Image 1 (tube, rainbow, N blue to C red):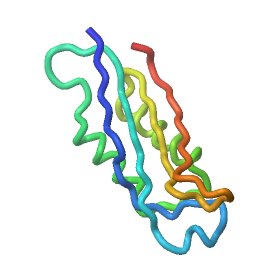
Image 2: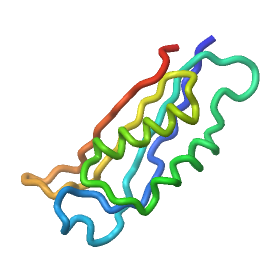
Image 3: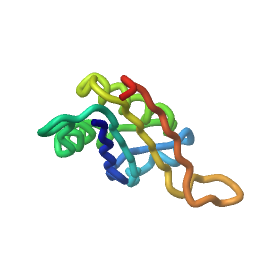
Length: 113
């Protein structure tokens, strides 16, 4: 049997942006992670532990959402090697013209279920 766990919009506090003016203060950065894989009785992936793992990224500084997504994926794959992971990082209201609501980037990797 296969299963899928989705943890939507985990809020991390980061300094994020290629422009130094974007890194003056911390901002809320929503991160969505999902795991899919084979399940049996009991816990396949403990979502409370996944959230604790992501706390390691709080109060860090990143230029690009792509780098943050890749770093999170790398840690999740090391901590939980079984199954397939997807990580989406969203940057609300990035400083571009015309204005947009958000930019997001998704990376995925791991064993296919």
